[in-house]
View 1: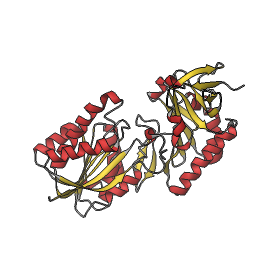
View 2 (view 1 turned 90 degrees about the vertical axis):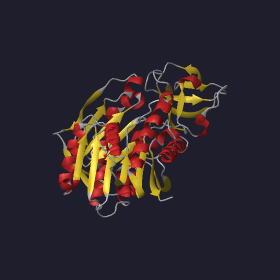
View 3 (view 1 turned 180 degrees about the vertical axis):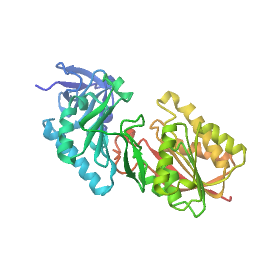
View 4 (view 1 turned 45 degrees about the vertical axis):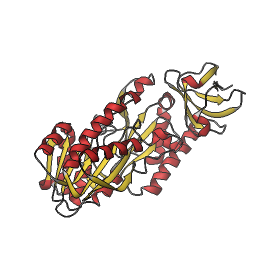
Length: 394
């Protein structure tokens, strides 16, 4: 008989409204002796099965739902889910050499991330259930995608909370160092074994192109927390006269310079490998002006306890950026912290605009690229939010 967990009858369970997580505090009883990564049935207090998912007693999220219909969670189940995820990308982003093929809960495969960089795949396993089945998943990816290499980047902090070891390496084929791959409209150097996520950030490639639509000929662009300069390089390709890209990681700045050279815009790109807060303070104090400013920082909030401090940090960079935009200028701003929702983020922006004596008009709302699907019943899957805002004369 399949192991099972019974939900606590005294708790209102989000799972009943479509969420895919069951916290350990929401479980009244565990039936059998399921090991980390085993499949369990989720029962209501009357013993009726509601769903089936991966179990992990080490994690605060004790069960991650896979399905609400009774079936075998076997190789064929995984193959069908992965096949459907790839088919979805083929439909929404056809011909893209770089894309996310599998996006964890968004593809009903909680804990599995698969990114594609041309003929190289990068896999991350963030749950015990997926990690336990990694060898089978690699076989399935070889069958469906026929990659030259599959690399694992299982060196992320979340694995510690799942009781999993940290690992990186080549799972299939051979990795011979950095590759050159097109993301959006620009080619970038990519080493899937570098410290930044799975090689590059893929969730903004559609937004790079969308923000570039605000660029006018000879525009002055400032790309803050730029990583490899995706926004700056797309702006330059759109006709910007000059772009300044700021990041604290020298490796990222080196990648931005190389990508700019490949794109033929290197002579119009200025890079600064410095702390973004310090550079913004310096530019603001010097009275610098820009036509388009992009703020795309890393998460300032890793938990609910840090939200207040994060909002202060966000407000500081927005206040300085807004002071450097004259009427007609555009601010494109993003937050990747799911602990700060879009409403709270916009309220912070409005507060900063008031202090900067700027009146804003919202021009666009952004989220992650469509290869990072969102489940409305799982708000945590909609981590990235962004806005384009134009300064008005008032």
